[in-house]
Image (tube, rainbow, N blue to C red; front, side, top):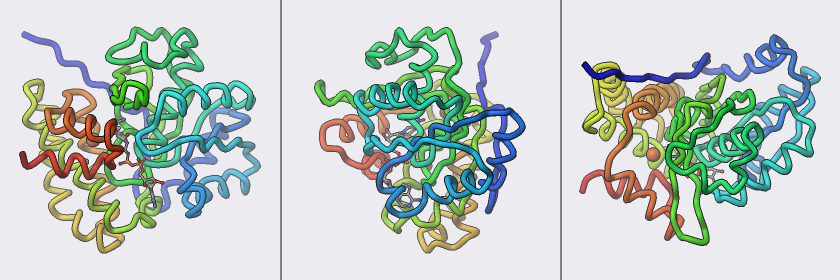
Length: 287
Ligand SMILES: NC(=O)c1ccc[n+]([C@@H]2O[C@H](COP(=O)([O-])OP(=O)(O)OC[C@H]3O[C@@H](n4cnc5c(N)ncnc54)[C@H](O)[C@@H]3O)[C@@H](O)[C@H]2O)c1
Ligand SMILES: [Fe+2]
C-alpha cells in the first residue's frame, strides 16, 4: 500500500467581505508590523488599499513592498528579502495574483532559511529547515490558488526559464479568499486566470499521481468553473464568488498531486515571451 501526503492551509476565510477578518487575525497573534507584498498595478488600481486601509483603521503598522512584476524574478525575491530585513516587520501579508503571492513565498522562505539567498538553490524540493514567516495570503485573481499551494514559480531572467519550488514550509498560514478583491479584474484577465484554474483541475485530475482525495476536489472545481467562469467575466458577484472558491479548491488538489505537460509548456512561454500565465495555459490545454 502506498502512502499519500496532503498539505493544506491551517485556516482559510471565504466569501464577500472576508478581508474584514484580517485585523482580528493579526490582533489574536500579537503581531506588530506587516510586510505587505503587492505589485505596482494593484497599488495603482486601489486593490491593495482595500486591505491596507483596514490595517490603518485598526492601527496596524505596515511597510509596502512593490518591486514585483508578473512572472516574478530572482531579483524581485532577493530585493524583497533585503526590504523585509530592513523593515522590522514580524509577519507578511501578500496581496495579488500568483506573482505577488509567489514572490512573498520566496521572501518568507529565505528570511527564515538565509542559506538559500541565491534563490536558484530552492528549485525543486529544497530541504529547508524552517517555516516561512507567518503569512496571510489574499488572492486578487481567480486563478493560481497560490494561497493554498506548496509551490511557487520564479523566473530566471539570465537563463530564460521559470522554475518551480515545492516546499510544504511555504504554504501561507492563513488564506483570505474574498471575491471582492477580484472584482476589479478586467474581462481578459478574469478569463485567462479562470482558464489557469481549469487547467489545474483537468491536469490535477488526469495526472498519474491523482487519487481520491484530490479527485473529489478537482471534479467539484470543474463543475464550479463550468457554472461560474462566464458569469465572473461579466463581473457578476455570484460568478466571482464561485470562481474564487473553484480556484482555491483545485489548488488544494494540484498542490498535492502535481500538474501536467500543459503547465510545463506554459512556464516556458512565460519565461521566454513573458506570456501571461493563464493565457499560456489556455493555449496549451487543448493540445
Ligand atoms: N504558486 C503556485 O502554486 C502557482 C500556480 C500557478 C501559477 N503560478 C504563477 O503565478 C503567476 C501568475 O499569477 P496570476 O495569473 O494570478 O497573475 P499575476 O499575479 O501575474 O497578475 C497579472 C496582472 O494582473 C493584475 N491584477 C491582478 N489582480 C488584479 C485585480 N483584482 N484587478 C486588476 N488587475 C489585477 C496584476 O497587477 C498584474 O499586472 C505566474 O508567475 C505563474 O507561474 C503560481
Ligand atoms: Fe497555473
